[in-house]
Image 1: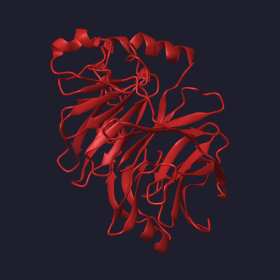
Image 2: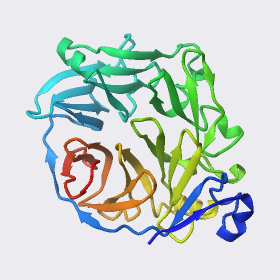
Image 3: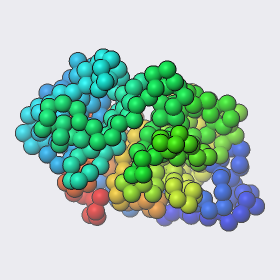
Image 4: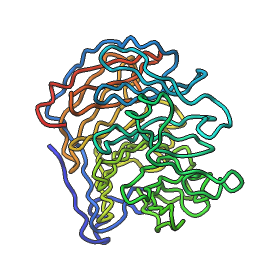
Length: 359
C-alpha cells in the first residue's frame, strides 16, 4: 500500500517530517510517496546476444538495427543487423577529423524521423549530433540529421559541453542536466538541476532543481544520478545512487513526484554514510518508455540486481529480478525486449512479456 503526501503549503513541513535543509522539499505542488509496495515480482531469464564486439558500453536496438557504442576499439560504433547479427558498418575512429570521436559518451537518446532511426551521439570534446542510422548504413559513412559543434577555443563556455545528460528537443533546444563541477553551478547550489538551452540564441532558462538539499553539506559525488526523458518531452525520471529515491519531473508544470520504498527519505548524513561505506547503491541506471520507468536498483549488490518499474504518475507496477549484476539497460517497447550488459561485457536479452500492459 502506498502512503501518499501532497504538500499544500510550506507549513506542512513538520506534519510530514520533511526538513527543508535535509530532505527533498521544494514547492507546494510536489508529491512525496513513501513505503511503496510492488504488486508483483517476476524472475527474468535471458540469454547472451552473441555479437562480435569486445567492450560494448551502450546500445540501441530498434527495427532491424542493433547499434552499439564501443569503448576500446579502433572504431567506437558498430551497427549490426538485429536479426542475423551481421556487422553492417563500423564508424567513428578516434581522431581529429570532422566526424571522428575522441571519446564517445554512452548512447541514451533515440527517435524516429520520417520513419528512419535517429540516434543521438556525443563526442565529448567536439560535437553532439543525431545520426541517421538508415542513411548511414546505406551510404557506409556517418550521415547526420542534425549536428551541434563546440567551438574548440570556447568549449568550456558551451552549456552542452558542460552538461552531463543532454536531451535534444524538437524545437532545436535542449534539456541539459548541468555537470556540477564543469558548469560552475557547484559554487551556487549543489542540487542537481536541469535547464532549457536554446542553441540558436545561446540563451538558457533558470535552473529547475531536482531536490532542495542544503548544498553546503553535500559533496558532488553524493548527487550521482541517472535520468531518462519520455519521448513526448513532458517528463524526466531521475534515479539517485546514494539517496533512496526516484524523482519524476514534470517539465511543463515544474512539479515533482518523490518516491521511496522506505519509511522516509534519506537525510544528507544517511546518504553520505551509504556512499562512504560503499554498502549500498540504489538507482544506478534509469531507462524509460512512453508508459513506464525502469529503474535499475543495485541495493542488494550480491550477485543480483532488480528493476523497480513505475508508471509516470509514480504508481509501482512490478519488480523484475535479474539473474546477476547488469548495467546499461535498453528497452524496445515494440517487441517487449530488455537488453543489458553484464560485468564481462556480454550483452544479454530478456523478454518482458510478463508485463501485461503497453510499454
